[in-house]
Image (cartoon, rainbow, N blue to C red; front, top):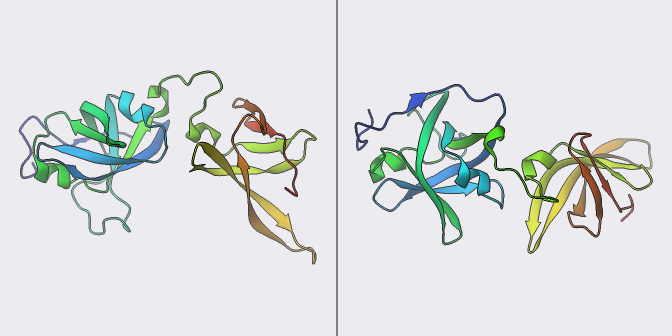
Length: 202
């Protein structure tokens, strides 16, 4: 057992759910009563706040080299999670000590996709858009969604596509399309496709 952990707290080894998705990482301890501050991968932390169980894996080496607290996956039960000053903070059941909270710094957070609350009409989780093919109204392929980013009030699709140069060679390139109703006609999650009002030379 880790120093500072209450007897009721354990790092229980667990199998990562087959539909697990990485949704964030633990930044550091928050306060002195075992709370932790979290960095979500999405601007919408609703899935993190609604889940009763989080699955943790070791930090990326670049964030915390030499981590040896545990290997594989551990499952932790959530006592409380909330938004505080624009950040997500969480308290795991049985963890009441800052030292124990600090020991989890950098760990990667996974959730089961099936635990996500249902999205409202015309709303989508970023993770569901990653990997979708994007075509325009004329059926021209514009690329595949590699990532999304937020620029003020709107989100932007970051597409990866293969560009052909004048000499006939090709290279990977990026295309940005605002994810707003003015440009996005349809999102077909089942068909893995997004139709947009956009041209390749925009």
